[in-house]
Length: 280
View 1: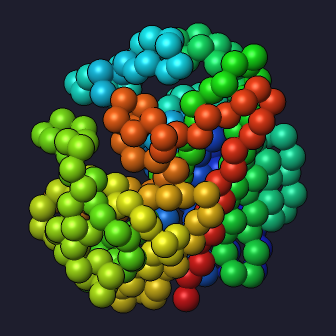
View 2 (view 1 turned 30 degrees about the horizontal axis):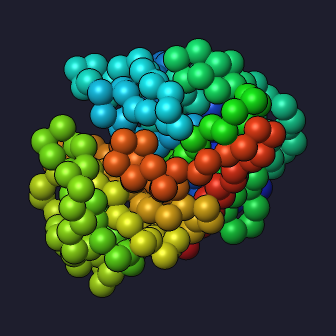
């Protein structure tokens, strides 16, 4: 089922049953996010999907939290990591719908992830673009580690330039797991000045992000702002097939390497992230 929202020049499409995903975002008929093929049922083909209750990779799908050993499914073969949480692989349910906005719900019962939680997405179009918010509430009786993020796929063209400011870049090994070292933010390119995408793979988290990133090409300028995100994860493969600029609340494998970056969410409490996308 595809849900369509409209406001002014803006149009968004959603596929709630496929990971609570956006399947398209356009302004004046021009793609802002890539459009998901109608025949696809994979969130990896979506325009944007949610990251909940953690972001990106957990090495080996294993971690310890407050004395508890946790083992998660390795859900991204052939990698041995557990990736992106559970929201993106779950059906979400429509809680509310109007012409320009909707609400989606996802509930996770305790299993390999031994904490029950509820997540809500609120999607709203307006004259300036898209507002996408996500809340997660701990429904277990123990403190739950929590991380949030969004995984949008922006249009990518040969002339695309990306600009953002950050304080560092998380260095990773060949398995894309952090080494424990923080490199200079301009390790690949001078992002702060605005730059073409490099010819090498970028699949890295930038720390100390100021919450704003712009994408410029011959079709115009896309601006992304976020609240509740301390990092920006940039994914740009060498084949030019994708450009992901992901607001995230923690770096990869934080549950093993930087536990303080996770939110320790008490029972009944919630965490929130919001992303805005506009285009000129």
